[in-house]
Length: 145
Image (tube, rainbow, N blue to C red; front, side, top):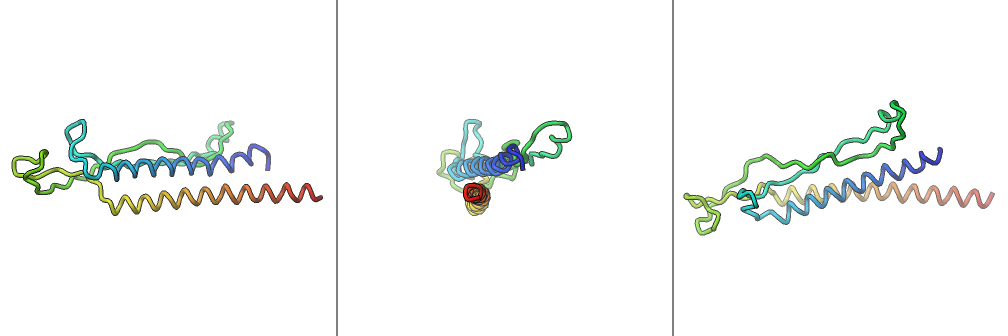
């Protein structure tokens, strides 16, 4: 394995770490706004989702570029599901019938997404640690020999 290939291994895992960290930040923002009934646009908060894409090293290499692969965040999109309405006639954002449009954030789903993102982060960290250990063992063998 050449030196750029060795760095590519760490870059792939690092891209996964960065993507999952960003995903956790978006999920935390969703949870923080689970009760925000009116944003700057006058509408209830809309849940956000992170969109990932594979960073394809093979396609880059075919074009003579040195790519490492991995994952990249290509955007954040709003969840378009309908905002639930709750009957709260005394709420300042209630309509004429007493219903308040609530954010389309489901805390159970957000917690599942957060656990999934955490596990993805941990998996990428384990890959980095295993790679570091294998390099350390290789260096120890070279020193001993």
